[in-house]
Length: 85
View 1 (tube, rainbow, N blue to C red):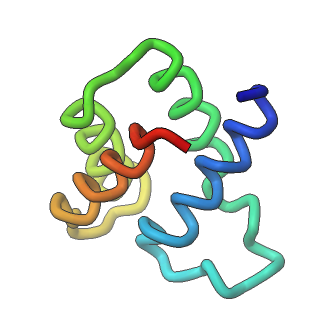
View 2 (cartoon, rainbow, N blue to C red; view 1 turned 30 degrees about the vertical axis):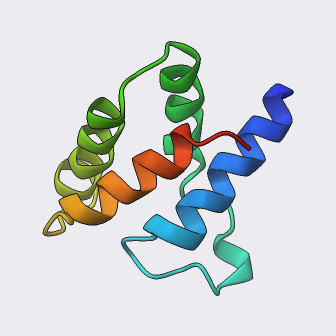
């Protein structure tokens, strides 16, 4: 998978299955999570575990978004990120 394809796949997963601020259906916000996508590309290349990926997503929800975290959703999304294409 190319870097661009991997980036787009992760972006789609975050928008479709994570989306903690509820902007998936707003076309102008398609790039809202791109900073996190870039970090996830590196984490996945480094073979981060599902638990590590989920912890990263939870940390974003708490530290960057000021939200109440959803650990179950983070675990599901982490599993999707690790699933073969």
